[in-house]
Length: 231
Image: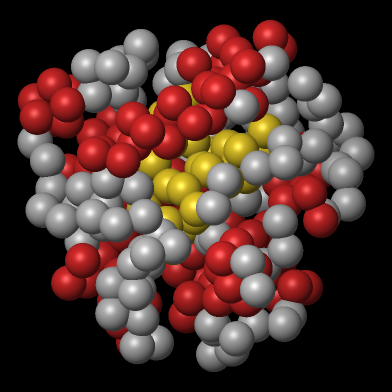
């Protein structure tokens, strides 16, 4: 079994491209609360404890958080200013030291593991050599930061321009067999992951309908917005 297949078994999730293409949405954008670094970090701790409750012992491998100054200095290679969401995420913890496929207990955001800053540059270079080599995607991905990765797939946060399918500036985007809207925000991503991990059936899910229900609950109308743009 390929490593990404193992991750899908852990999350009970098919890839975004396995979902039916969304029809053009007539829904107004969901109202998101203003971003709160304190709230994001608090909810990340809830997710961490949810993993621990399922005997997924992610905590020992989570590295100490970085100050904003240290984070920006270490990401001087990245061409855009890092938004507050990334400052808060890496201020909480600097990911895990090993790639997700090598960690015993990866800190999953769906089926991508929380990437430390030391590996983020390499993941960025890999994205730009592959998906970023296509002219329609090049500028968008050039300014999108990979904070989670696994086996040739990434979750990125756009730092300059929003994804065409998203009404939100910093929606989380999946880069795997496409470049697709995944969550409306980093906070909604964490809430969705909490819903998945705290479900009694996790990590041996086979209930995709329930996965989608939790996804939709935290990202209303997401399936109507996904896959509308073909780069």
